[in-house]
Image (tube, rainbow, N blue to C red; front, side):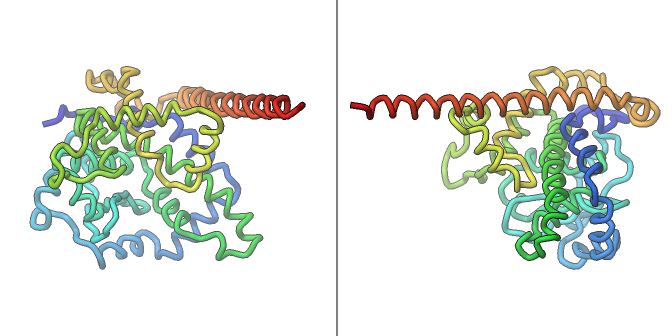
Amino acid sequence: MPTPLPQISAVSWEHPADRAALQALRAVPGVDEIIRKVIAILGGERGIRLLFQGNAVRVGPEQFPKLWAMHLENCSTFDWARIPELYVSQTPFFNAGAYGVDDPFIVVHSAALEVLDEDETRTLLAHELGHVMSGHALYTTIAAILALVSLGLLPSIAVLAVLPVRLAFLEWSRKSELSADRAGLLGIQDVIIAQQLDMKMAGGGRGESFEGALNIDAFMAQANEYTYANEGLDVVYKLLNTLALTHPMHTVRAAELQRWVAAGEYDRIMRGEYTRRGPESADRPIRDDMGAAKDYYTHEAKELAREVANAARRVATAATDAFKGGRS
């Protein structure tokens, strides 16, 4: 059984970029209006829940009992008394999510259960519970809807109005996954299993047909290769490839988890050195969170600027060399 984390507050594991992106999202003009309209269209909390009550299986002691037991154990580990409803949706692609407004619930796609073993499934459930505890469910619901909306279906004026909101939601959504990944690790308390979850999401199965089909060391080598791939315009390509995604690249998530553990934050939490819910969490200075987020984004921006400048210099040098070589 995992070590209990009594009264742990979500701020103990939340990624600083998650908090910064959420603040930036709330500051985008029109966000509140779009949230109100989308929730109204869906029929509010009740309407969202009915979407799954009508077309998914609600997990409990008599439905997926082993899955329900894992969910209860996760709630016990995080000392979370308000147990979210859990559903399994018959869906052929791997995913899970936390949705709702005031009373969030968790949905796991059947494809995920076909791919993951028990420990990885427990990690996935802890990841989603982390979303619930961080208050992500409302914004996750809106982000998922906006990700499905084709801007080509909207008038040009509407596109200009909605695009900044959509991009802000997607940026926050990606960063919120980094927070929830940390919750997943705290739920299973084994970094290898948490990274195996990323590997399975990236493209793996149980591997019954192929002995030794997956190797976590090889996947982490791949993750580090992607992280440090900065030749030419690699950084720009990675940015452009990510803009329309609701989740970060799976190798990025595995590498971020590795960095969090290496920084000692995970071990500190396991020693009981974490923020508790209640006054301790409420009194946490916002400037500390924003300072950490600023450092994170400043580093990212500097990396991007440096690599773009290096790429421009390489292109200029290649062009000059080609010109010299072409002269008689």
